[in-house]
Image (tube, rainbow, N blue to C red):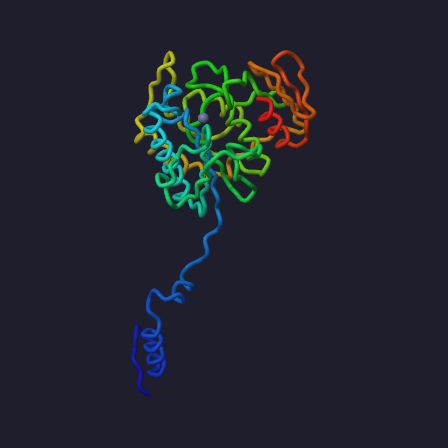
Length: 303
Ligand SMILES: [Zn+2]
């Protein structure tokens, strides 16, 4: 019988003929060839909430809103820091990335400026999740970019909580910055916050609350001025840090407080009402509920 010896083995001629036929019938990039060689990616969804006060270079409120020309400059930097976080998440294996524009009216990142590999959740929403709108239990990790410390924090850049009226927002005796109550929303869905960027005070404050969390302080306050990284340096640090943190996501714990949630909200100007909330003293509201989202609804109504 006619045969061909290849590395000591003999293939029958008829077998070779069949292989040759298949080879010409199936181009290398055929769907069948790809199906055989590719495994479906394991879903890994990453949620990125982007504020502006903690971006590299931002020092005054005019940098993050209004008609100041620097706002137009810094909204571009917001997109770039978000893109650095997106790139880091994708390098760590993310199969889906959602960016929540979280500052002011939530229309800071221009749609064409963000990395097209991520989805952008843009615009104000009426729900209690606010800066975490779009998050649910299908996500594996949360990233905060451009975050700032809570109202009254010393040595912090543009420190405030939600709006200029809030003096302090506490649940179960724990004073919460935006990163704190947003981490609680993530904890509600069993999702850990793995990374935060912002000014030194914001990063330190969140670590004090959450315990272990990766992060980059892109600037620090020096007598209301800032000393900090260039945007390019900050973006490199964010890209590397988010990749590192998403890869290590199993090492971070979701942040939770035990229900029921007892809210104490202190404000400069009071006079608002919410069903079930009481005015405990001038400028102070109290409200309790076992549903965290209901407490955040009360906070949004009364602040
Ligand atoms: Zn903001």
